[in-house]
Image (cartoon, rainbow, N blue to C red; front, side):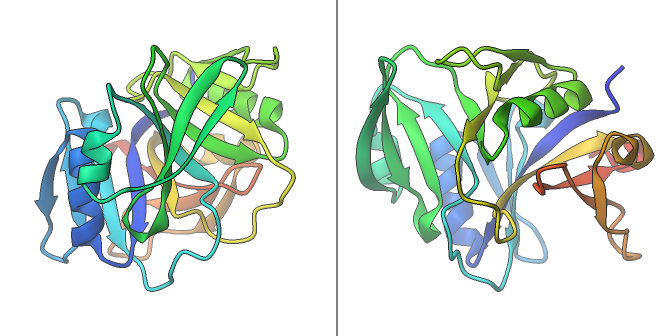
Length: 224
């Protein structure tokens, strides 16, 4: 049995209102503003929730996690405020690279492609295997044959979790991370590191996976 289950996605923002508004249109989710000024997007299922959290530091490097989305055209993203950076292709797949407000990268496919949470990795096969084991998914071959994609993750609001090989190391905190619900001890036993304990007001732990990607772990009692 997997030690955790997917809870939701989290985005850092200097201006939560601006970022919440863009992603509400991009993901077709309902936006809400919380009492502290942070944003939250709600979908039809709990796993579709996206939290937009205010942070003081600006974006200084390419995001190591981004979304691959599928749409008939780029129009709703451009009208919401995205910039069109470039068009790319690989192994017969074509997509547009966009930048959301505050510079977050995203890719949009207009053909018959899977949606995905994409994570840069120095060892994509190992990272895919780790997250498949803890989230209850299955590693599957990506173009090129390596099992660096993860399919069948319960409650993940995307078709896949993709790990993409990159040469550069992780140097700053990820501005896109995800929350899970489960047991911290079991994750540590599997190689995760505890970065922060609950501080009295927050009821969650901040952990890093073996590759250093931050994620938050909520106990089942706070699963809302």
